[in-house]
Length: 212
Image 1 (cartoon, rainbow, N blue to C red):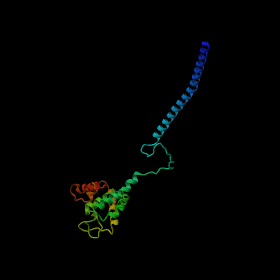
Image 2 (tube, rainbow, N blue to C red; image 1 turned 90 degrees about the vertical axis):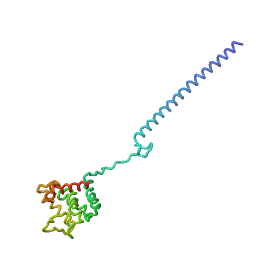
Image 3 (cartoon, rainbow, N blue to C red; image 1 turned 120 degrees about the vertical axis):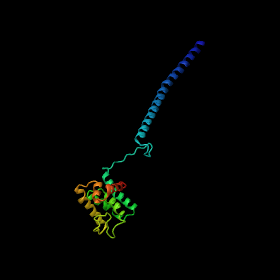
Image 4 (tube, helix red, strand yellow; image 1 turned 45 degrees about the vertical axis):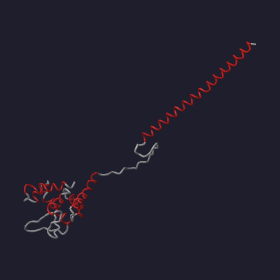
């Protein structure tokens, strides 16, 4: 009787152990698979997050989204020379406006005429400042802001400020620059030879320096 009970207990113990072994081999692979899947999913998520973070600039205003747009076939080009040339009439205009000169409407013409005769665009404005306080002190109805051709014997007049700008610029080119007077000091030394020690040339240079 006792032997039979032992045999029964051994059988129960054997099948119990077999059940535990079966459960172990069944559950362990499933658990391992789930763990590996979770690990790879987490790693993949981190890689995607890192890629998006690197692709989108921090100041773009987007988060986690990368937007692509087609580039235009040709990018517009901007010339620095054009910008510089465009600025010159405004520099002259602002200078004339500051002194309330009647030459204000002719700022563009002054620059265009200076280019036409290869002169510094500030030169005749500076001479007008020196000679007539920018056309405020001139012989009546002469339109001569530059003291051009004015001497004790006669006073040269122009029909308009436009004509005066043209004739003075042309005269500076043909009677001064083309004859070797290429610096402001040399030009003004001939322009007003009675000016002591080139004082007028220095004054013109100082006026031109304010138009930058």
